[in-house]
Amino acid sequence: SIVILDFGSQFTRLIARRFRELGAYSVILPGTAPLERILKERPQGLVLSGGPSSVYDEHAPKPAPGVLDLDIPILGVCYGMQFLAQQAGGNVKRAGKREYGKADLTRYGGQLFAGIQGEFVAWMSHSDSVTQLPAGYEVVAETEDTPVTAIENPVTRRYGVQFHPEVVHTPKGGQLLANFLDICGVARDWNAEHIIEELISDVQAQVGDGRVLLGISGGVDSSTLALLLARAVGEKLTAVFIDHGLLRLGEREQVEAALRPLGVNLITVDAREEFLGALAGVSDPEQKRKIIGREFIRAFEREARQHGPFDFLAQGTLYPDVIESAGGEGAANIKSHHNVGGLPDDLAFKLVEPFRTLFKDEVREIARLLGLPEHIRMRHPFPGPGLAIRVLGDITPEKLDILKRVDDIFISGLREFGLYDGCSQALAILTPIQSVGVMGDERTYSYTAALRAVTTDDFMTAEWARLPYDFLATMSNRIVNQVHEINRVVYDITGKPPATIEWE
Ligand code: XMP
Image 1 (cartoon, rainbow, N blue to C red):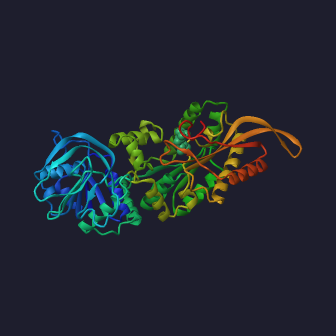
Image 2 (cartoon, rainbow, N blue to C red):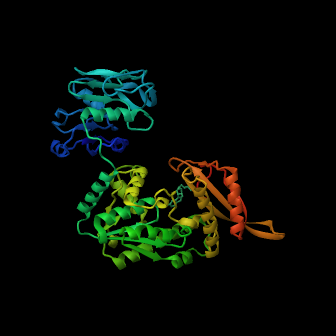
Image 3 (cartoon, helix red, strand yellow):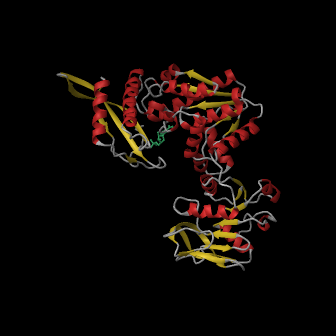
């Protein structure tokens, strides 16, 4: 294995992720982990991550005694490199300039860069720099601003890079990390099947004989988690799927059909009356969200008491959620609890979050191996409040029914025309606007439906998807022909910002 010692960089998990992509098994341990703990992992190589500290800070975290004397290759990244250099007798100085962003290597070579050709763009984020090399080391890369950008000591097999090879802004960083794996002689046979085995044994170790409760949303994360937990703890898992009446056409049936046959102990709760009753006559978007959140907790709590007691609450928290909530373990848990909306204290569960080190595409790969059907596995995200925030204004069963049919025509159409995977999210909105039209010599006075499709990497900003006119024309025809309550279809051509993805 490769052991990654974490000194607090926001990119540490990305290093592990790159190694996984390269088929190598790695473990992240705290930067100060004792030697015995590290040796337990039978490391064939060590990575010292970056971090916010300066090697001169009084409390700068350091590897435990003996760790740097291990006779295995060591790669220091950013802070890690500075630490390696200083510890071997080199000099690190606060540079006059802070270097941040992309930089071109003006020269590179040596073992770490073996086989890499052409331009090498490196992502930098540092102020300290190595100014004097320790004995036995040589400089193997430089940029205009940083003469010592990468160093190596081929005899002791110590390597350092000032930039971050693990981020996407260093396009050839993967090759560099692969070279490090080769230097370490690490097997490249680690794959999603191994990850599943490891997740299952971790869950079993954590949960023991305890009982686990999981809320199912129908999205890929919670569905995949249900399949994993069913394998890990079988009947001790209770998965609760709340049908709040704000789901898409056939969604409840699809989730049931996908999960039950694969051994998930699934309870579907029909809470449509409660939700729609509480929402009746409410048209303020924030008010709608609050009511849904509140009803959700009520329904979930009721089921937890009825089928409990439970020892654990499982959540499909992904690594990006952990980063967003500011990283620290404590902070991450607060946000996770918030995901189910602050359950009362007497329902105090311990959390099981097997995916908290993984990224979305990795969960999708796990989902594939666990047998989650494609239409759920590759589905666009769907908001917790469901169609409630897509029926603008107050919600009635009739309006929901109209929107479900419009949405189904649009989403099915995107799939049929091979456009679905090219969009990050697509949705239909039922507006309260009624307008005049003509159909078969008859005057109509009906609703306007809006279609929206966006492309985005992170949903923080988005572009409207340039769907082909012919496709939009087909959708418009199908919708007004099949959904008689609609006589006008518009396509939203606004980006985010200034608009949001949802209309409420
Ligand atoms: P906006 O509309 O803010 O949406 O651009 C960004 C992403 O978040 C989803 N979204 C929600 N998800 N509860 C959720 O679970 C919500 O209240 C909510 N509001 C928006 C939205 O679908 C999009 O993917």
